[in-house]
Length: 129
Image 1 (cartoon, rainbow, N blue to C red):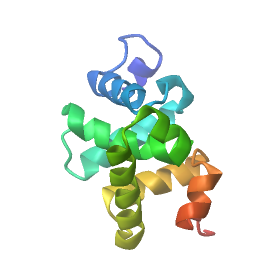
Image 2: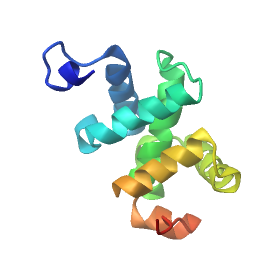
Image 3: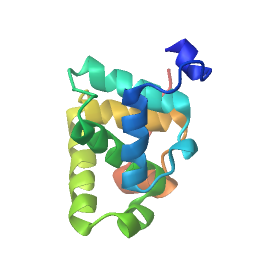
């Protein structure tokens, strides 16, 4: 995977699929750090998700893009039903604590990509080590 990082062999299909899912959700993939994308894929694999499945990548991308943009911007490029679904997932992730969605939100918080309005609306915070 490191050689793919230097574009020796190009981007992996999983990363290309995740980039496409980010675009579909309304975020240009270059606006999300590579480390966040690679970690999101690893988290999905750790939770036995099939990262070769476009729908799996889309679910993770929707959550990360919502966190990065907040409700108004995410709502501009996604139907209201998708906005409501992501918000329900985010609320459930906060309650669950250790689900894939919770880990993706924590990843976003630690990477500093979560929009302040999302942090405020859902009472998110990163605890001190």
